[in-house]
Structures are given as structure tokens and as C-alpha cells.
Image (cartoon, rainbow over all chains, first blue to last red; front, side, top):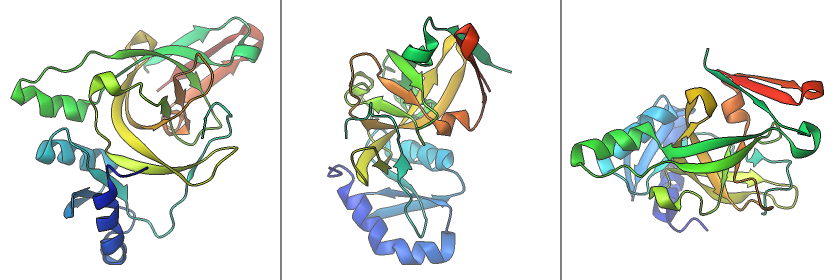
Amino acid sequence: MAQILGIELKTYEQHRDELLGTAEGKFVLIYNDQIAGVFESKKDAIEQGYRQFGNVPFLVKQIVKIEVPQDFVSNLLGV
Amino acid sequence: MPSFTTTVPNLQSVGPIVEIQVAVGASLQAALHPSGLPVPPPIRALAMIDTGATGSVVRQGLLSPLGLNPVGVAYINTPSSTNVLCYEYSVRLLFANNVLVETTVIEAPLQGQHIQCLIGRDILAHGVLVYIGYSNLFSLSF
């Protein structure tokens, strides 16, 4: 499914432990295999992503130990 | 305080639905501006306010005319699946009365014919939702 951001997700996994040690709870901006920065807010990271890379896929991700999925109770969601 | 109030006949059966517009987010708009690239016009969509949704969702394909690329991913649990990976997009949602919300939304398949967007608790976290069942109306304020 996530082929578009596959490289970025792999890059995050490769640097996950190091990011957890230095910036847990913050938001990392990743483009291809490059960590472009760590930000206090998701909004700041997205702004910087567009400013630096333009309208291309990039990954903004909160640095967390445990990934908590979002829950949807409605059966409108077809997945 | 920016707010809108909507009356829906048969609110109980239909649910708190509202017409919105989905537009390119402010960050991308700012990035497009200096290059002179046109900003795609907003898309009209029918949304339901869903207190059972952690985040906001748009129907798969709805954002195509905006030419957006994903800015993240999210894992979601639904009544029938767990840990499904979905893409996140940065958008601006425009409600009635010029109420604007800058947010990220998940793109996922939405079943049924009408609802194209779910307004989840990520947006409600910033506002006050008033649901007056016996009057068939609800309002959202920020």
C-alpha cells in the first residue's frame, strides 16, 4: 500500500532508535532517504516540507515508541 | 468565535451531515504562489461529523483534482480491519459561515453513496460541538 512513501518509511525505521533518543514526541520530516529536520509541531514540519521540496510526497511523522492506530467505529469505512 | 449551525431534517436517522469544501492547504498554497503555479479550486463534499472517528477521513479519489501528494501515513482500525496503512494529506476544510480548518486528513474508501468525508475528533478537539436532537440541529464552534 505505502509504496509512495516506502523509502521514507524505511528511512524512519533505520533512524528510529536514534530519533527516539533525541526527539521523542517531536515530528520528523523525511524526503527519500534524507532526514530533513525535526520540528515541534506537525504543521511546522509540513510547511518546511513544501517549502524545501515542493508538492511531492514526503513523510512527516511523530517520533513515538509505540504506534497507536486511529480508531473508526463507523462501518462507512470500507477497509 | 467562528461557528456554524446546521439543521438536518431527521437528524437522528441521517446524522450530523454538512456540506463542506476541501481545498489545498495553506502551506502548499504558499509554496505554489511564488512559482506562479495555479491553485486548484476547492472541491465540494458532503461530510458527517463523527465522534467515533479519531481523525478525519476523505473518500479515496476525492482529492485527485487538487493534485495533492501525501505528507504522511496513518494506521487505522475499523470494525472489520486492524492496522491498515493509509496516506495523509494536508488540506483546508471550509465549512459554512467561512469557518476554516487547516488539518491533515486520511484518504480511505468510504462506503455508501453520500458521505465523502468524516469530520473526526482531531477537528472536534479544537472546538465545541452542540447537538440538539429534539430540534434537529447541531452547531460547531471554534
